Image 1 (cartoon, one colour):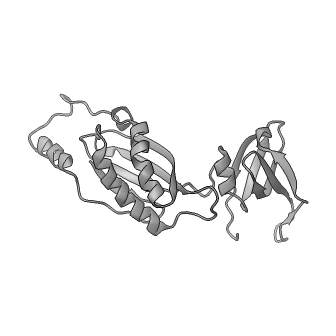
Image 2 (spheres, rainbow, N blue to C red):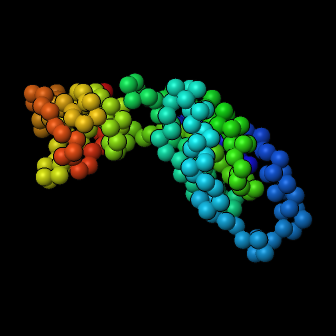
Image 3 (tube, helix red, strand yellow):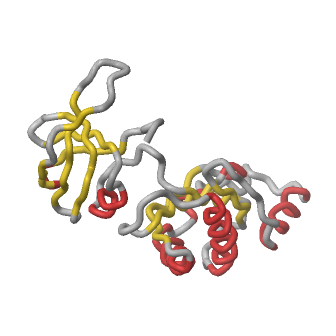
Length: 207
């Protein structure tokens, strides 16, 4: 039984489902949490089943499911679905799309066999602005963005990600300049993503 909320800044709630109504009736009948301990949401749902159920919904909107997580217990349960654009697209998921996907996924959750009886929030969101680059598709989605990189050899730098095929990337390292001086970059070079220890997108206010 899910309420829904969508991110980034917009949030909405959908009507409760039948089992949620029954849960409230149990509460009104002195249904005891001590006699019936609250299970953590992560222990009462199959994230793999949820991902499989919601994948076709995401695909209808041209999206992919990036991550499925569950947290909380009792009345503080939240199931979070992170969706993203296809790897060959640039930009971010529109808020209107997030809202539509949230509603569609809430309906699809009615078909999940082990949907918990206690109320929970279904939160649909997109990746954060400073996402980590872990998979090849993350690198492809971040073309044109400023990224911070630490290599396996211990080198750290900030660079503009110009292009990537998912195994190698063309970057232009940023040159440190005094405050107020326009950004400067070195000539483009290629790096092997296998040589990258960690990388993430840098937040840019004027990009």
